[in-house]
Amino acid sequence: MNPSMPRIHLASRSPRRRELLTQLGVHFDTLLFRGEARADAETDETPLPDEDPVAYVQRVARAKCEHGWRCVGWRHLRPQPVLSADTTLEFAGEIIGKPADAADAMRILERLSGSTHRVLTAVAVCFESRVETALSVSEVRFARLDPADIRRYVDSGEPMDKAGAYGIQGRAGMFVEHLSGSYSGVMGLPLFETAQLLRRFDHPL
Image 1 (cartoon, rainbow, N blue to C red):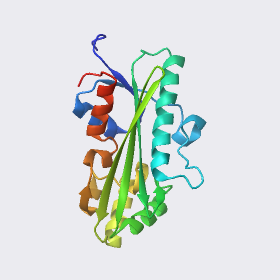
Image 2 (cartoon, one colour):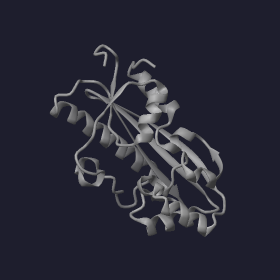
Image 3 (cartoon, helix red, strand yellow):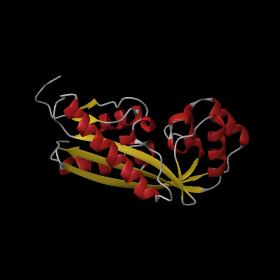
Image 4 (cartoon, rainbow, N blue to C red):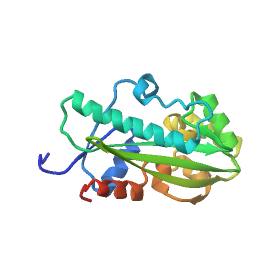
């Protein structure tokens, strides 16, 4: 690794976000928090009572980013910008996150079948005392799904770590009848908004 090469810390476990950052040509170090997201009060992804979905996703992305910057100091890591993101679905005004289990994934996909939902991805960058965020909003319409297709998809295990119980870049791509917005945003890291945010921190792209 060239020590003079500009890099960022990516505060995410998501392989999809790593792939998308690499697609942008961004060099990064993965910054992992201890335990799962809900296990740490600083990055708890549990929605607040009656929380608006847009406010929720922006709050969580910012909290991850700020906590990531604190971890940089605590762990004596190289001081470089921290980037985090959070993705959630909004359906009928309700926040839909990752499924709790296979039965929950089935219920979520049955609800989304034949309907349009919104995918909200917030991106945050923190460096020293400065934090900035960006938001990507996409509309996705699912075709009417056959129950057998839903069962096969859930049995594949793919839905289990994904907001809304599906990954558009995987087998669930065949469910999507129409997409309006950002494909990469639905994947979990909107490339346009991420690039604009990094440029505001003078990070070369």
